[in-house]
Image 1: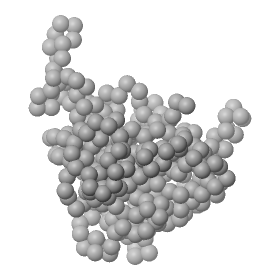
Image 2: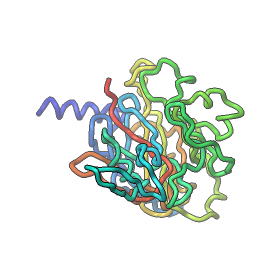
Image 3: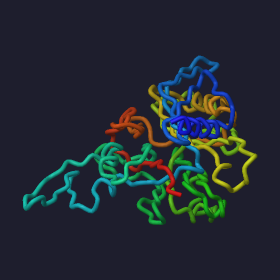
Image 4: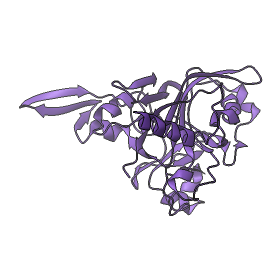
Length: 314
């Protein structure tokens, strides 16, 4: 037991970059190389309050996967108007499908540690992905020309980062996938999201003009720069951390940007980039670290696609 506790402590120390945790952001380890920050509150200098829960994962020790909710939940069955028909013991059965995080989780054979909403669905009645969705090289949904969907999240940029023993997520602008950047077009697993909140290298992506727009509940995917410079560059131990965050209240992206640029959030590291993913009434996060999954915000909302976080097998 003592050895196990010591290993867990070392894993969490590596995850935090070796820094003491800031009192404001109390990250708690829920599995090796994975931590959660539950029901946290952040107040911006202007007085805006952000209530949120976030999960942090070491990208050298987890694998990221995209799943389209329509395909995952229907699982090859005959479906009409959201109802799947099947024959069980000679009798016809009908099942009303839920194209949600809970629906996806229930139909996955291997249960992931974390499941977050990333791609927007067309509507609550339709799980059709709004914007680009590529899974294992197959294009399930095509790029859309919308100013808010200004980014393509590539789960692992193998063309740009060959030979890395870690997952390297990269954010491209939405037209890169077809017009400007051949690296983006080569990405096997990608989803169209946006807008970009923090640009690469911790540059601001949102202007104060956004404060004049409505506030919404938000889902955010972001990565840090943990400064693990004592490990070989392409090793798994030197990899960045990835994060999934959902807010519990309606907030402006400009205020979220302020929080995401706050260094204390990263326990010794620095912000790198951040992007808005499915939110508003599709905001949801599922954490599977106990007998029953922890359901955060609207895990029954119809979503276009979900991001799976699971431990690597090797």
